[in-house]
Amino acid sequence: QVQLVESGGGLVQGGGSLTLSCAASGSIFRINAMAWYRQAPGKQRELVADITSAGSTNYADSVKGRFTISRDNAKNTVYLQMNSLKPEDTAVYYCRWYSTFMSQYDYWGQGTQVTVSS
Image (cartoon, rainbow, N blue to C red):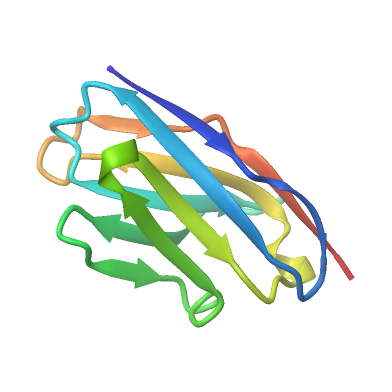
């Protein structure tokens, strides 16, 4: 079992920055990918960015050039650095740690609210 604890959300003005963190504990040795998703009110959850154990990253078009996903293996933590925030980035952000080979190893954080004011 893997436990995920997210932090770093909050209220920020448009154009500002926030960094989200997601720390994992437990049996993470089967995990080879991490991701951040978000869900705005009335909308479906969407992928924001992901990173593999090899370090490959992928971003949604809407955040390319503004957001950066990274990980610290020593701390078992994945980060999402968010710059040039826009009101449309307002959402609950969720981290996900998972195995791309074994679907039963798929864990989600509790979510953290990010609100961007105009």
